[in-house]
Amino acid sequence: MSRVIIIGGGAAGLAAAVSAASCGDEVLVLERMDRVGKKLLATGNGRCNLMNTQTLRYPSGADFAAEVLKRCGPADQRRFWEGLGLRLREEGEGRVYPADAQAATVLDVLRLHLARLGVAVQTGVQVTALTREGRRWRVTVASGETWTADRVIVAGGGRAQPKLGSDGSAYALMTAQGHRLRTPMPALTQIETERKPIAGLSGIRVKCGVSVWHGGRLLHRENGEALFADYGVSGVCVMQCAQYAAKRDTSLSLCLLPDMGIADEEGLRAELQRRRTDWARVPLEQLWTGLSPARLGQALFRRAEIRPNDRVCGSLTEAEISRLTAAAAAFTLRVTGIRGFDTAQVTAGGIDTDGFDPANLASRIAPGLHAAGEVLDVDGDCGGFNLMFAFGSGILAGLNGRKPNHP
Image (cartoon, rainbow, N blue to C red):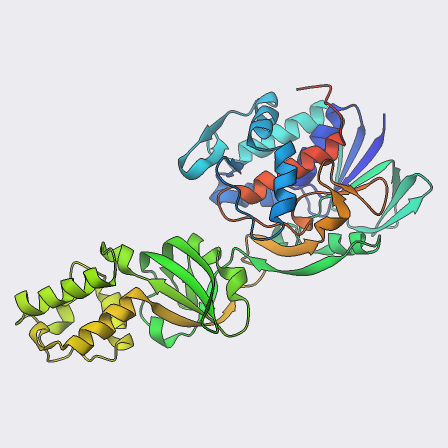
């Protein structure tokens, strides 16, 4: 039997604790917050999107994530959860949730088995140092108290949502052992843009294509629902563009045609030409009726530099129709920044995965040291990919190449 200390009581740390204890290890979890699993409770708006059964989507660390999930992917994780008594259900786009769609149920299941397997948990503990002493590790906390272990698993998270426990302090524990840190930055967060073009649009949702551009070069593209806000734009499709938009001198382009039920620019041009003829005496301010919310229509007029006041639809020129079509097909906004770690769902960057074996998340530099979850330079898109990597890497780190003694 080995003694294992796990630093961090989040998704990766708790999965590692259950796996290690299932193999007969003596396990101690050290958590900085006053209770374990705080961030887990907030995931998926409290529904806890555990994993995704479709194509992997990892903007950073894709190869490493694939190697980890090849060994502990959706099928393996389903067996893990069902072995703990958690029933699952799969919804659209491959998203897998607990059957009752409650994150609290996931945490309850984990805590039940921590107790069942005799895992010790200490909360309100800040780890300050890891020291290699022969074949064992000494873990020191802020109070000066120390513990020793045969293995240490660092699962302290990244920097996203520090109020829930991820403050980035785990990075220093790893870099002190020689591991390289890739600069952490917010990911899956809202994008801030110039304010004038979106004045009055806050609260409007649109189905659209979202593209990030830099110097005339396309950096990334997504499709989905965007939400206008006072500061810029939000929504899953926008948040998945955030780390690309963080570069200097980028712009965000929204193709609004899907929200209008229009296939392409020529389709919109034809519709506007038809309205010019059929609605010739209708006030021009009503041009977008049935196509777009009135406030968004006004923004499109401003972007096309058209003043609709005291005009009728029949007065539209071909040049104006072209400008309106272009504005709707590419409603472009200059990016002024992205929201910070307080609102980000995940951290991009982290400890370089080159230093770890994907089979058991063991350090290639420091024997007996492992890392799992968001502390590593792996980040996924929305849809359960981040939790799937956290649980998969945590399970493998806990098992360390072994088979559990318990389901």
